[in-house]
Image (tube, rainbow, N blue to C red; front, side, top):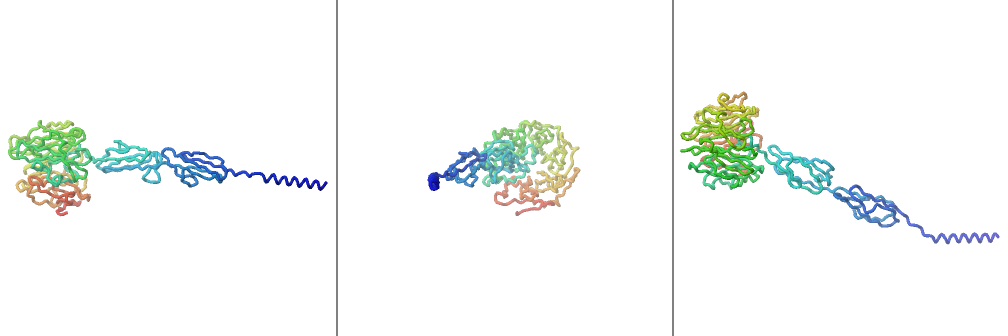
Length: 554
């Protein structure tokens, strides 16, 4: 019995061993989880896979995004992995980065401010979809004009969305206030030698003549491109009826090269003998116009008639002011003397031996559209001046009228403005007649000693010797002026030709004004060099804060 039980036990044991050896062991299974950030999607979200199984996953970026990497550090896309463990995998997307290029024309700057999103780590690029506010800030004496390129706008502040590479161009224009007194355009901060403006040849040689008076030129931005152009009104004909067309030379953008444009002015007759050109917006369209002071020829003259060039949508027309009398008009100045918003003109007439010309200085009142009428109630001087200027000398908001003396007879006077008229009762003498230098040909203003009071410079001239002399009249406040010429300037030498115009520029940018004689061409073209033509600066006087020093060989 025992033997039987043992046999049975051995049988069962042997049978159990045979069954277990016939079973297959199952493979290990692992979980794969695949996700993405907000910038895109993945081709599968994961699942359970046998150990050693290969899985391919594709990361698909949304619009304006790019795939950057997987969370395991791989940058392959699609990515094939072998599953041998549980794995969490994330596809990382980042926004596209777009450059914003800003080009500036003129003088100014652009401020960039992020409205939404943020700038990338690269300071020259923005993440896609970033909204940027751009603000154009013009430099002093410049104004914002327009945006072009990826954005076209005429407002100084814009927003732009960076959804692709973009380029914006901002244009600043030099600001010229054509409603200011004409003095400021006759004495502007730009140094230009009109005798060398075209291939170093004198202007008007195409007519076989030249301009006698540099004061007959005008500087203004006639084509509205932000650069000062040159208007030339030639003169000096011996023929009573001969007129030279006015010429406008357009600045090519460097104050060195100018191109004559003969098509700007219609009906271009020109004056006979233009003694002075004044610039201003006479017809209220914010485009510069020109007024020509015409005194006719000197010998046997029937007198001259003033004329104008008025703008009309960037087209200019010439006309003679036939409603005004013939006169020996030697100077003029414009300004809003009555504070009504438009430019009026004071026209000064020298006495002349011819009995057929008007000898009265007159005020021309502007109707705001460039139409002028004589108003004898504003002012009738007792004696004729050689030259005149309108300038607010006492800083009271009203333009004052300055008369330069004539023929050693009349004193140089200031007529104080009140916004209504001028009178002998509201006038003072600042310089007595001088028998030697008996004409005042030019008047300039500058606060030489920085005391907030405008000082006055007079260019005096002697017909008999052709000598010139600069006189400095200092403003001592309370309408008190003193002649301090001898202590403040090394005076100009005697000249063999007329010096009938002076100008002031800080040509060397040292913070001090420089004084130039700018009319060496009166009846005798005497060319002079200037910076930009041959590298030299003409002889001049430099103000050092205390006095003018003569510079002959800079």
